[in-house]
Length: 388
Length: 115
Image 1 (cartoon, rainbow over the protein chains, first blue to last red):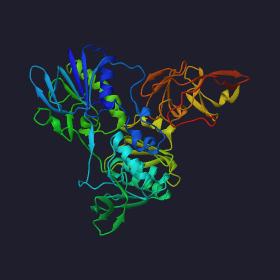
Image 2: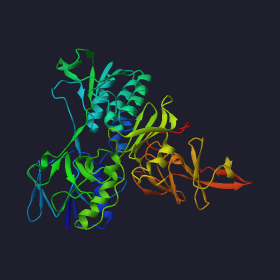
Image 3: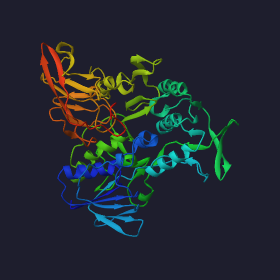
Image 4: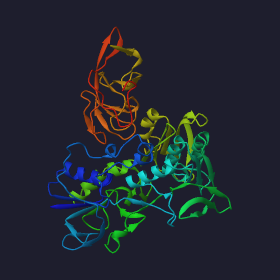
């Protein structure tokens, strides 16, 4: 393989570039990024960066003097992928990049509610975070739509800025999709204890206002006043540009356990990729930082070996979230019906370690302010039943 | 020289955080070596004493950066800067730390009480 193009210049793309070079790839490396920025870290955008404790410089992912000997094409999106004698990536400025191998790392884009009212935000990029912060500084009331981790973290920062905060969630409990309803409910109390109004089981009918948002109307007729609205209802994979490319797409780019796509010479990593997870027996799109940081090493092996390399065992998905000084950590994947038990601490104190089991096997671990125990328990996720 | 703990209170494979400013983590490896480094990961605010100790390396509990306890060197990202190391002395069955004179590499947003 003489040339590789990486499409996506965030954590997954950068990690792929590092892995390719570390594994001895000495050919031409091109990195395409839709954003104009060098690779930057997104998790702090809803935490330290939004709170003003980190700057743009602090978000840089590359080390001082790090040189991957790559050609960077930043600020230009990929618009298509064609298979010919080589692989050809069309770019939005009309140019193209040809390569023998392609790493798809285009990430995800925040879901929106549509409309064009000002004061309504999503949070995915540095610009999003800066705009949200500027709006929060001038606002009294924030309504967060969607009780996921980004919404909860923004709510937390807004409370420290003195705003009145309401979170609206369609599901019966916050964080239910990631943590299950039981543990989601346990964490709900954390927000209520910090003065956040949490309205669960409530669907949003519409946003109100003329030009600028002034409220959120719920399906049950309630109306919440708002100066700023954050829409945190998840993200969809940025894969539209692959239409017609032959790369199979479901909820994200469909990949095997090594990151290989349906097209030879093309692998996919990060938020846009749904790798087959043997522990689950299904393809799973993982939107977490750790997957974007670690899986590209496996995908690079797959690409450079032409698919001959046996992929490393997949590490369980891992996420963390900082809320009101509490550190929430979760590893694994939970499904409805998993048994959940608190193994250390207790729910009332909101310092606990909970273990999720399915047919006797540990499938996930949740730690709230229990980093040391979590470090140990995390290693047991997906071990065969009865291994310990 | 700061007393950390009785040697018997820090079994092999375990770590201890001393509440200095900034805090220091003392590790007792499975091979019986003692090492001390700044407790705070150089990447983001997390306690290395809560991390995973393997050989002479500690893995940060938050993002899995790995540091060589002997030198403080980064063995695995996302950390970019080495963690400051301190000298460990055992005297009369007590573990002491001799704090380094060098400046620490603390993560963005984390400051010492005096700085």
